[in-house]
Structures are given as C-alpha cells and as structure tokens.
Image (cartoon, rainbow, N blue to C red; front, side, top):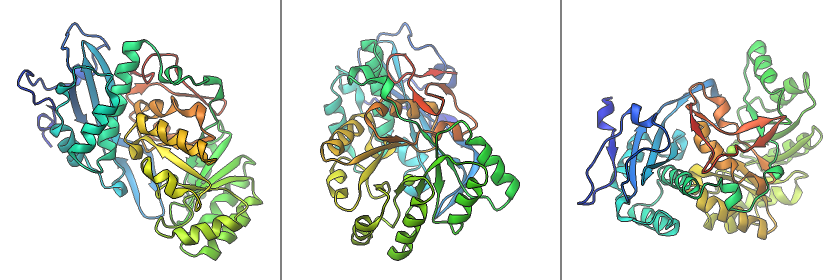
Length: 376
Ligand code: MG
C-alpha cells in the first residue's frame, strides 16, 4: 500500500495548512522550533510483528495492525498509538478514516481533555482504539507541557506498582513449549491462555518447570458452566490467582452462577469496554480488566479504575500487543490496580519506543514527563 496515502493530518480548519509527516519527522526530537498554537495530529500505519504466534480460543495470528500517532502543540510532540487485534473490529482503514475526520485544530487549549473526548464521541461511536491513540498522545503532550509524568499528576505512588504477568500460550511441540516457559523466568505471575483445548496440559507443562503463581484467561472459551466450575476448582489447587473472562460475554447469568461457586475471583475482559460497563459487570464478575484500547485511552481508564474501586471490585490493567508507547501510558495507572498484565511490548519484535521496565517482575514507570517514552 502506498505510504503517502496514509500520511495525512486531521486538521481541516481554514487556517491550518496540511503538512503530512514523514518517518524522519516521526523520529525528530520532542521539541521542534515550530510554534503552531493549535493541535496538529498526524499518523501512520505500523504493523506490529509478534515474536510468537498468538493462539487464542478463537483465532491465531503473527502480526497485529497498528497506527502510530503524533500530536503537536507549540513545538511539543506527544506520542500515541492504536493497536487493532482483529476480534475488536477496528482496522488500519477504520482508524485512519476516523483520525482523518477529526478537526483538532479547533481546540486552542490542549488541556480541554473532556471537550476533546466529547468531540471524538460525537464524530462516531466505537472506534475505541482510534480514540485511544489521540488520548494517549494528548496525555503525553500535556504531561510534557506540565513537565510531569501522569502518575504524579494523578497523585499515585510509583512504589505501589504491581507485578505484571507474562503471557504464554500452548504449543504442541514440547521444545517450543519449554522455550516459552523459559521466557517466563523473570516474572512473578504467568498468564495462561485457556479455552483452546489444551487447558490442563498448559498448566501441567508449566508445573514441570515452575511453581510460579498463575492467572488464567479463558478468552470466553468455556461454554459449559459446570466445566467452568470444575476448571476453577482445579486451578485453585494450583496456585492460580484469578480467572479472566471464563465464559462468553453474553452468558451473564451463567457467569453470575459461576461466581457464586468459584473459589477464584472472576475478571471481566471482553464483557467490558468503557465506563458505563463497569456497573454492568458488578454482580457477575469480581473485577474488571481495563485496557486503553477498549476504554478510549487514559482519561476514561482512570475513571473506570476509580469507579470499580469505589464499588469494591478488583481492578486489573491489561493491554493488547502494543509498542512501549501505549503500554507505558497504561503503566502510569498501575499504582491504583490489583493486578497488571502489561507485557504487550515484550511480545513484539519491532518496538520503536523505550519506556516501561519490568524489574524483578514488577512494573517500573520511567521518570520522564508525559507518558514516559522516548523514541529508540
Ligand atoms: Mg483477556
């Protein structure tokens, strides 16, 4: 596909002169000499290459489509991105179409976060990853203007970040499976994908080599509530912390039935996207998995975490396969959550940012303003 076709800017205002970015512009320093006085959005597709193929309950893939975003204001550049796993319904085409439809140059004050989100929601429903890419870039920009990282702006203690889990998926080849298990050595929690027909084999293979705590993501793969309960009981005897999305998101009554009987907490993932879904999850689930690509970014993710905590629910922070840009943005929130699953950047071979670090299994937020990333 012709890259030039994607190199667009969303600003449509009469006073704005469209200036498509190039890769060299993407790689330019944070500050430029330009003083635009308005928000200038630019973006470009960026395919994420996975280090291992993803074997989920309902699909397999080796790449994830993405779009990298820049938001410039008075010479300061904020970075953002959209990651679009196919099952969520967004694509490079839908994201670039949405971003092209935005006129952010109308906002002379970049601190109007609420107004900018209301504007994006007024343009089109859904498009959550596209909206997240703007939100992340906006937060990066604002943090840089204020000279502070977002965990500080939110008043969070970076010492309270959780351990992150590292995801493995089943592989029928024992040598390949062993290689995947060896990669989990630095982590205190390992996430096991289930619902693909080798559920117990994956845990048993792991237990041959490690006693590490596990969490389980069934990715809606268990469709029989009695089987789901049997699995929860079996997992509870094997140092499992919680089960994420055990049953299809439509099976709310069955999930509530399971929750009454399961010894392990049940966490909503596919069931839940944005802020209004938090209250819907209460009763059927013990907690929620917040991801920036579902929540339309950091602004609503913070509201979701605050609401869930106030309702006595557990909060987990997850991600898609993303570069360190979006994963580090999510990490800014991590001091206020119970569990983190922020390994998306570690699963790709072509990260273009330096940011979040995992130190002794624990999420470590960079001491840099904004979302805390630098281009590699
Ligand atoms: Mg999940």
